[in-house]
Length: 326
Image 1 (tube, rainbow, N blue to C red):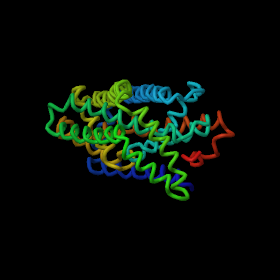
Image 2: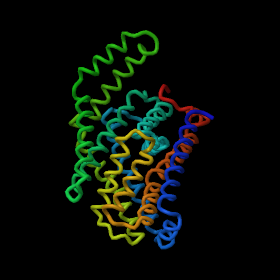
Image 3: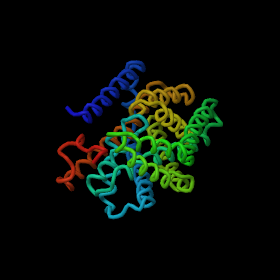
């Protein structure tokens, strides 16, 4: 079994353990009773909202490709390449989504080091969008401002590194003076840093950040819809706040897909701050994670399968054959 499949199966096993622990902690019968009166049309709407997140973020991907002057990629192929990155959504901070740069390199001969910085820009603007949602709702909760400050600090550090070119030049110079693999890595890092300043510099943050704000608001609304499906009277702004703080926590703490971290924050906030019954809170948490995290992974696999059919001579027989040195 290759490393790619081991990573996916490991994350799936971790997910089963996490959700199993929540079911045992809450009580199987409580969750069963909650699901028995749940309106499943709410789950269908939550899936639609999560899917709208992907199309909004695809607009960001297209914007970044345009900024980098990447041409000759058909709209459908670009969408499939973007969605294929969701295969590795279950990686710490979603950094595994750089996989789509490798796929683009294989299918359209665009060097991976040229487009890989898009993932950094995506995470940066996603963080700013999520922080904005947290700030809007933080006034009602004492702990909300803490997460907003933590996220703002992380974003400030990231922007500072991008704007301050001197550390990057020192790193590239040191790599290029080395022999062997490190020396060959130097030019690629130089190209990557140049692309990073194009897609993640202050001038390029406004439009993608607005798209991120809309995209992550959709998933926050998905949690609200699911809670309504259980009859839980949690206000829309509060539900979006709970989802946003959990998303930020899962991104800042380096665990695959935020597993365990995001789930705990959603469930505890719903019970402690939203006064949602434990059975409803745990069931809503599991459903929103299936509608967002695990649905994204499934969409990624479907997109990658279609790409392999469209480019059988360029993509190998399994997903693990696509690597960043393509």
